[in-house]
Image 1: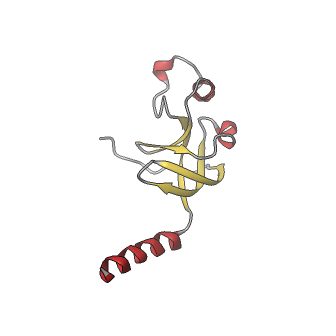
Image 2: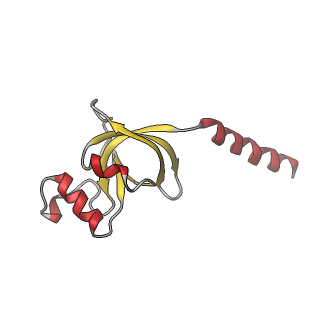
Length: 114
């Protein structure tokens, strides 16, 4: 029992010590993700805004992963743009707690397609 408690406590402390992380990707919406073509709304930024207006959530597309953003106001000005988001990811819910969003001008990391 002591070992289990120590293991759980250690894991919790390591997670807390890790602090915020940086994620680079593209601001999108949960309905379209990486592919805005089926909606037939151009440019992509307009598609993101329209989808959110109709109930979709702002998200960050990182490679093939789409993470819902906890902040649903700030991403509006970055729709379909490359950004760096600083925050913490809940891997279970795929919700990214946003501490800060800023433009990103570099190349996004390549992610192999499945």
